[in-house]
Image 1 (tube, rainbow, N blue to C red):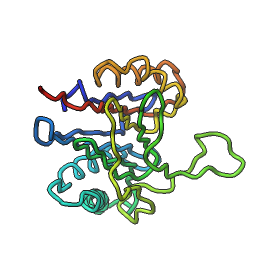
Image 2 (cartoon, rainbow, N blue to C red; image 1 turned 60 degrees about the vertical axis):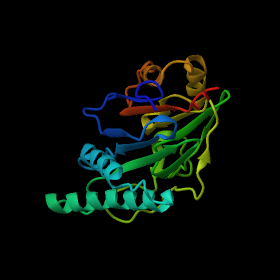
Image 3 (cartoon, helix red, strand yellow; image 1 turned 90 degrees about the vertical axis):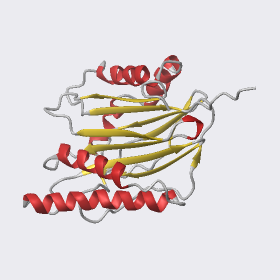
Image 4 (cartoon, helix red, strand yellow; image 1 turned 45 degrees about the vertical axis):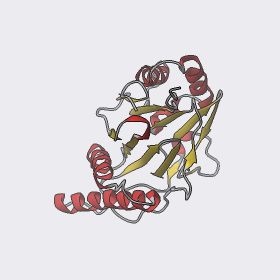
Length: 245
């Protein structure tokens, strides 16, 4: 796993006054058996200190995840709950309401040909494979009856320091194939249709991860929407190491 070549991230503030998204990578080991962690959080603008919540969750998840566990799923759930607990502690420390801060979250663990994830909220996790895009994680939103705008969707789960209403954490790891590209982003990427994201990836698939992430951010920014949210795009390119003969 090589920074900027096989994995990278880019951000844009959009039209917001501050950046409330946060992400972080952590590499574990080296060579063909190296593993990679990614944590991405999108602070909720309707709550106070979204940027504090997102940074707190990302840092806590990366620090608390026990990658030595024989079963990564419960370990990832434990790290997620620890991160949520840190939000509760920070709210108490500052004397705020129990749910004053909030953030959505996606945590990923890549190792060899597998990826595991745990997610809460609406930040999307996409797989690009052989020219097609698919969403891997659940979207925890509900669309009010009679409303046609994406902006009207209501978030049904988030990390606020209290009860986590919905968590997506599949029992089995997802199997990757040579050439797969995984995109994890904040919901600011939804300013453009998924089909356009797929086209951009198809055009620039051979670029290093950093340049590809930059192209995707530019595609969103080119829309110049007056309501453009914070945007974070991370790219992970799955490349099987060549076998020496």
